[in-house]
Length: 304
Image 1: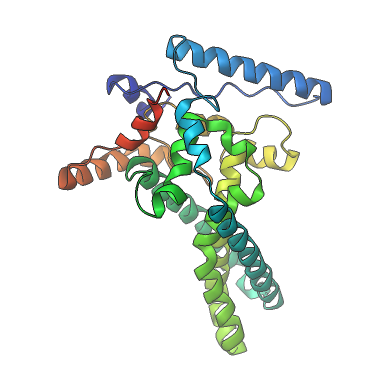
Image 2 (image 1 turned 30 degrees about the horizontal axis):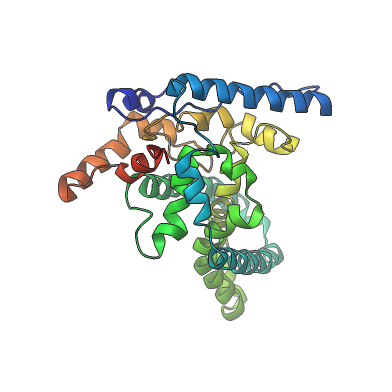
């Protein structure tokens, strides 16, 4: 367990149990999956009860989780639908142009761009995740209920994300990637073939960064899903091409101060090793006097 996990008890924070070990999957039929799901739920309940001394209930019945879930509004839902439709329309448009312009001459640069896109997307996912987990409040105008609320809900009900549909899961990430997608589409419509040929490796890198960024929360959702995942998803998790389930559990030990990267998780260990997030927090706290994760802890401690 990373050092950040131990810091929760030393810092006097409220302990939250990590998710249980995943059931083994090879050779499991429908009955086996159902039994495994029951076992997972039972293990989670037992672990939570042990962690809280039989007191506060974590998960969907937690008072803070119920209140936060009720803040999901019809206006927010509409924004998510709009962003998802527009985002995937632009992804399809840009992908068609990239495939049409593909050249073997760019193969090595495209492969490098795919790797760099995944790496930078992982860092950016960590930066956003750290920022929303650590600072700000649900009471902030506009951004509080719309964007910080899901982060607060997730720490006291980590499996809520598995009950979100595709729109709710991916709507905010689609919003973030709209501007670069529009910019790319504009280039395909205005630049000459020679200019596009020269820019092709760069545009492939940007496109891969956009794809990894768009699907980051879907990947995050899969890291909390223990039953019914497609085999290709578990293959990618097992080979650590996307965020693995066991890897992400390290973050879900209160006070949630480590392993913030949730696209591939590749950068979590090196960033933790150099104390990257703790150093940033020390700088911001020194400049502003704000205490990291104060709002997160407030919601975790709600009992009614």
